[in-house]
Length: 154
Image (cartoon, rainbow, N blue to C red; front, side):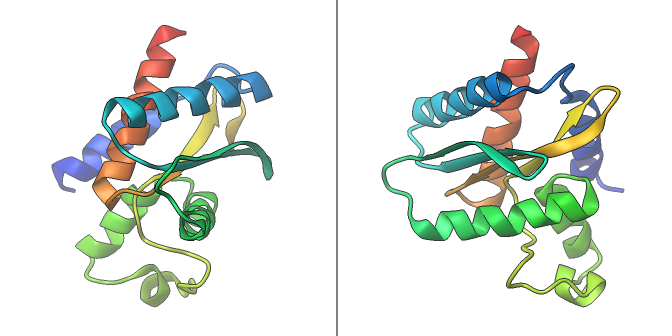
């Protein structure tokens, strides 16, 4: 397994919440927006817990297309329980796509970075946090950076 995939497994193990409430979603969402602003980037962010959207914001310069990317990235995280970038890189490493490898239609699943599972200690995966608007790696890195910053403050 390559270093990037090992790094992602570590991120998924470490970036976990003790609890995740509606207020947590708001604070995490605002942290992600703040991170994007500090980098001069425009993104759309959505946070879901148990299928309910708890946070959504589209910065200037984004479009309705970003919402469809978010839906498809969320589906990947829900299906695999890993970040969407992790799943995308695994498929690329195997020289295949999610459609070819797993029979998942491109209309509903996309191998692209930017979605991350919300893991709560003692509960497991309870939802997703997703960013769209930048290239794959940048969506993933911005999200992981903001999550790390948020969780280190707790």
